[in-house]
Length: 275
Image 1 (tube, one colour):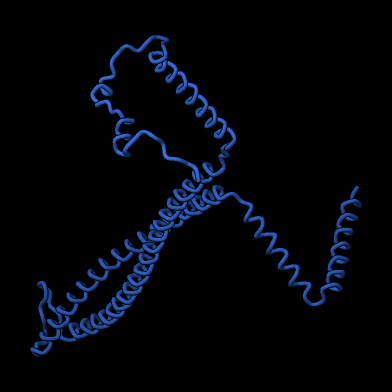
Image 2: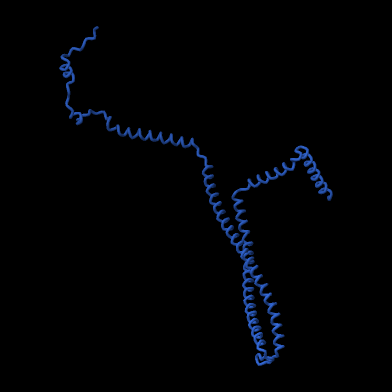
């Protein structure tokens, strides 16, 4: 049982080698180009065969999948903004502490300049050497704190630059998403319009039925018109003597046309036709 898959795989490999060898013999160095072109053509044909409605739904899903990425970007920006606020507060506190230390050192320095051998601070007495040693330690700590503060300020500037870039990127992503949503809705509307036109264009009207309907209407018009005329003529052709006076004819003066001709042409004899 284990030998069958091995034999099948061997046949597939051998068949592939034979096909590649035959293709190389037929097409030469162009064989690879033919293969790549064939693969790309097949892929394009597969894409063209996908319904537009399905592709629109796929585009909608791709846009929706950007949502988690945008949410993650918002979360990262929020963390960075909070870190910046904390760092700003820390820098402000350290700056205030350095200012206090500076004031204290300048006070001690001024007291040492007075030349006193003993100095009293908060009801405690210190020698000038003790004050000078304390001042030296204060100065060393101040320099370290000042360097640390400078590092914090540099880090703050870097964080502000990073969050500004991320905010710009987020704004770009949101703008692109809004534009894509609008474009997708436009595509849906255009597709609906095209589908409506195609639905009407696919309707086939039988012209012969329209022609038969027109002929029927013409025949009915002639039949009804004939019946109407028949009803009108029943009052005219009744087989009786029309004793009613035609008032229009009575108003016209009767003319003796024969007498008028004789008087005009000087007699009643008709002109001779002999040569």
